Image (cartoon, rainbow, N blue to C red; front, side, top):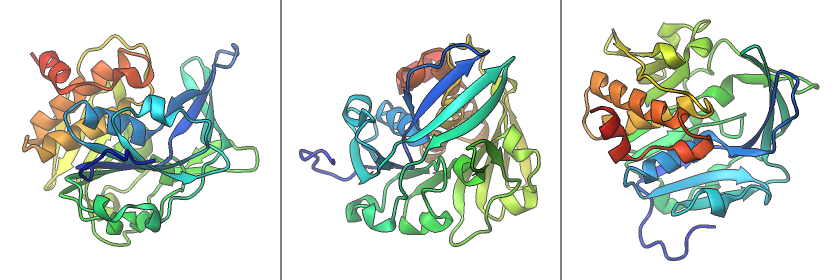
Length: 283
């Protein structure tokens, strides 16, 4: 469903499942199906920074693609279901259950003129993409948020997390961004075989970035949270855009922290920040 009026290919491409979240807080009533997905947060943030953005995804017709991803070109792999997660919150702790999964995203679903973007953002939610998908593209900068490749689930759908990413199967990523919770059982040495820059985010405690053998601490930007969904994705894409535009590790980290703070002060994807808002947040 690419925009027929599009005259040029996207210079920002995001790939991965779009999804629905059903939230249950402290045994309350379940929420409605809330649209989400790392690729959606990324593409909207890039669009709001002036990039011509495109998304390659797999969803059922129930996901409001046209309503959510306005002014963004979208290539959809047909799927019987949209990836759906039930999130059970109890005293701040979350148990996540897989309700439904979308279809795999094959290489041939990538339009030929989308393969050389300025920035590539890959955000698998499950295992819809092979780990060597970075080889499908020739971006100027690549960014991976690999949470979906770490997820495991059994017959009951309850999600657990692996302690390591699959070994490299092609060229390295420029940037990998993961959470502190995901990182705590991982090997720093093995991760650096996969990327040049490793970002580890830790919510309100800030983030740290490993580059050229040196860790840089990034302070969190103070915020009054309304919705924490998508915070890590917003941080990652803002960091990638800042690095693409030439900012240093520390400046890109500060920019990403400001973007994430803005994101969590609004509900859902309405918080995907503009360049102007982030710059104003930075003072």
